[in-house]
Length: 106
Length: 214
Image 1: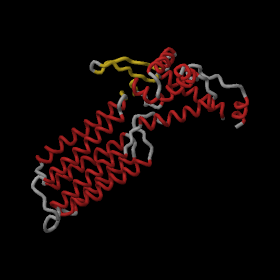
Image 2: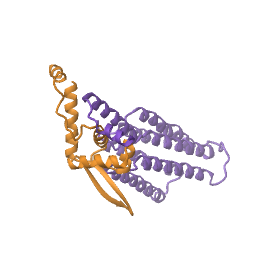
Image 3: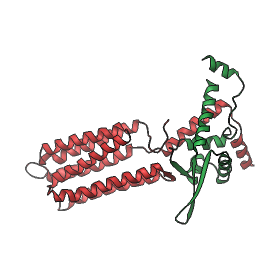
Image 4: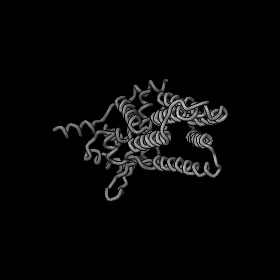
């Protein structure tokens, strides 16, 4: 309890800047809800988030550069499909981010 | 520019409270969109069993004479339509719910489908080889369904499926024990009824398939 009061009164926590932006936080949260071992097709992720393809691609690239998501390109028949997963590193980073938020907010 | 405004909003830093609220709402939305509700499956199969076993009872299973006169093949046609429609509805729900999702859950779903198909494909010839009569044949199929539910309940730690399996085993034994005249009625009431109860219970419970815990 005392820790929580100190935390709220303290400066903002040092949050991961890659995750701490509205769009990328939504992407990470959505992917965190998918069971480990499962992956989402890009159009389904886009549909779930209500983002444009270009905008989602931009944010995915930033998350991919940080090693938080993996984008695997494959073919279903002749149709190209991009499958998106959260990496183990991404899952850990998201959990750390969530923990930091909860600690700060008490 | 709308696009620029949207991009600015997307990139905006959030306060910790806003972040937590966004995580909660996004998780809720995602779970609602991706989770498989089990209750439609119970409801669909409960309806199929209810109609098919009731029609069979009316056509064949009374003590003195059938309660309803039906042309030859009508009962078989009713079964074909009920089971066919239930399989089709199940397939549509699974395909819709799992679209754009691949990996472990999808592989598990395919294996489950294969298990059900293999079990029923084997039950037919098995019943014929054992020279089972119509009611014994029916009991064999209910037995197979019960075992599959027991297996799924054990594999997924799902008490509802486990309960349905145990209940169907009990109903199956009772239906055979009360004799051919009431066999189909017992299954219509207590077999289909069990699916109906399971649908209500599942509707109120958590929806988990394909999602990470928590």
